[in-house]
Image (cartoon, rainbow, N blue to C red; front, side, top):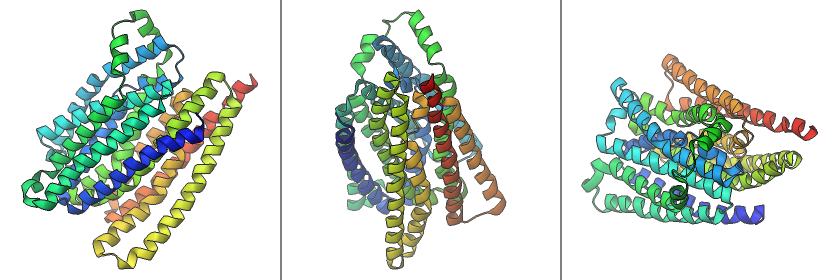
Length: 426
């Protein structure tokens, strides 16, 4: 299947899901009590970073592995690692609660239990995605995306309908029901994507020797990529956590709605492009066609950069035209969105090729970016403590720092791609 056709098919599914997400999250943000909606967004910001590395990143090796037997071993290793990370998640949540950080005490035992479920389900989704990419089964990802869109519209729509019909019925429990809905949606997508049959086929079938050899061959994934991914997602979700810490759950609702409204569509677009491109990069890598891989990297970067810059100009013009007609709360929200947009555009430009560092096993370069990103967020925390910025000023500084860090990330990917010239020459 051609790159264009594959992208259109998978892109169409993601457009449907994004439309559902934007409509439902916007509606819920408008009608939900701000404290409860902020609690829901806080819960996602705590759960998502753990699900990103709960498989100890063994799944990241799947698209480029050549042996079907070793592919099965990686599936077992990634799946069995989830329990260990869930224990770590429990310990960290309890520690944050004891330290009274990020309003974690607002989460009750049922919400925490659902966060663990979300971590497990989302990790299974990630493993399933990469398994499907390795098999070249884009149709499976597309089908799961449509299932998620349908389940999301139903779950969030039910909460919105109850709020509109009888607000007092669940007004104090909206956060709980939104988290429960997100868990249900993710479980349904995991059911569509995760290769349960393959797990049953490979579980306990391989000997200890092949497990040991596989772990030695792909040691960078659990040893380097896992902490790298942990730091990466900590830095990605740090803005919501910092806004919660400094301004409370009500501001989390406002900032989080803008962030999820922009970042989720951008991330989904990046993921769509990345998954399609990773299948092409895998072909180049297995064929050792480094010249074609580098050329594809440059073409994709230039294409997405041009599209992002054009989108930023249109977006800024639209906000400028509508600004005077908005209520005061809408004006603050639009300014937050405008300040965020260069940061989100930069993340899209870089993330479409970010998996190259993993495929080329240059995780040490990714780790440099991750430490820098976390250091930048820590610096913003200290700076806010010193200067006491208002919310809009703080968002502006976050966006500026994020753009700079993403520029460094792109240069690290470029270093990895240019190093392929030595392999080509050899």
